Amino acid sequence: MDEIVKGLIKDEHVLVVAVNCTEVVEEARKIHDTWPTATAAMGRVIAGTLLLASTLKDKQKVMLQVKGDGPLQEIVAESDWLFRVRAYVKRPHIYMGLKGEKIDVGRAVGKGFLNVIRDLGLREYYQSSVALQTGEIATDLAYYLNTSEQIPSAVSLGVFVETDNSVKAAGGFMIQTMPQTKPEIIDFLERKLSQCRSSSTMILQGLNPLQMLEEAVGLPIELLLRSEISYSCPCSKDRVINAVVTLGKKEIEEMIEEGKTVEIECYFCKRKYELTLEELKNILKDI
Image 1 (tube, helix red, strand yellow):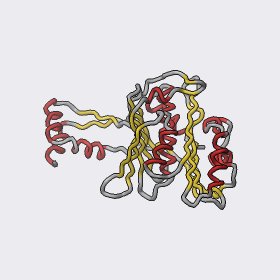
Image 2: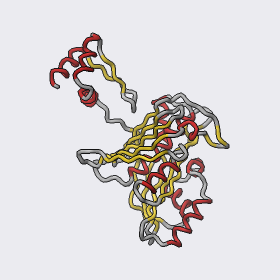
Image 3: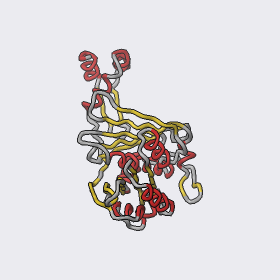
Image 4: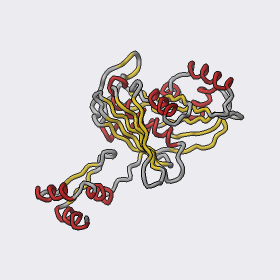
């Protein structure tokens, strides 16, 4: 079962979060018909976004966007505070082969930027960006947390794609220290994490998120949160109409001049919406 857990190392100032999102990533793969490299990249971004979502408060959302000059071009995932996540990859039919024993995500992403956009319920979104360090997503996310948010963090993300293209394991974990964390605990965690198995290996071998954390840190964990996660897209025709309004009068007039029903597809779930000429005229009238 897909789930996320968050906790503290018992009697220590260290936040730990882990997620198994295998079923969600498999659902995303089917929706977007992704090939292995695109699947692995999208799965890592989904897992990373869910880890970030563990820090959200009610009604908040977070989006992780990876934009590079490699063939994938762009990967986006968004999650809300209830761990309802959705995602897409701009070029889903990409397979770059292996680098060692792992799918070569870094080469497929290339050089570029990792952007984190937070909807904190205020008038404007909070956005922060860092240059991609490796394109492998986990190290890039850890670099973002360490530099942009000044939170010392270790991040592990993994996706295992079977030879039949299906997702057999997807997830990850995040360890964050605080100013009060004792130096000897930091040293211990660094040694422990350097010997830790990959997230996808742990999931393949049947470990749940709590067990993943226990193996990663080697210390007792006090649970703060345990929640199921799901792939969910809140798109609707009303949202599509609102998006068309933002295009402005000129572009809407050009749509009307073409004299055809306009079909708009949601990036995240591939659901299609049609706007008739009459509806486009009404939108123009309301602007």
